Each structure stands twice: as structure tokens, then as C-alpha cells.
Image 1 (spheres, rainbow, N blue to C red):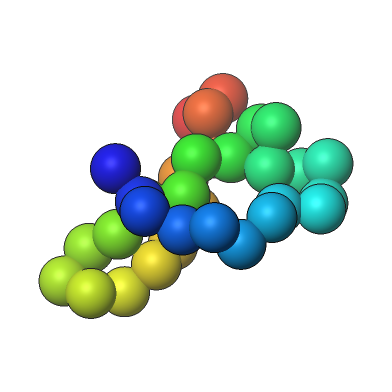
Image 2 (cartoon, rainbow, N blue to C red):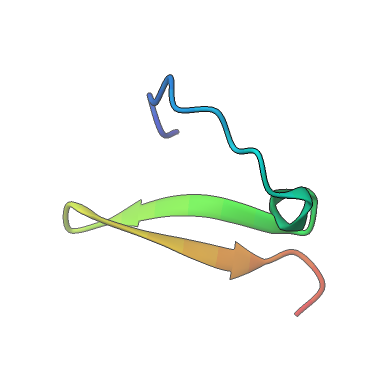
Length: 32
């Protein structure tokens, strides 16, 4: 689970899940 207080203002984040892998953040599509 990402412990981030940064607010995601883009509506696209409703369709993506923010993940962390080896210290890097990336988004995973919830529909893929």
C-alpha cells in the first residue's frame, strides 16, 4: 500500500491503481 498524502487530481486515477515496485511508482490499469 502506498503511503502518500499527495492528492490525485486527475480523474484517470479512478481507472488506475498506483503501485510501488522496487522503490518506483507506476500505475496499473484496473481494466487490463
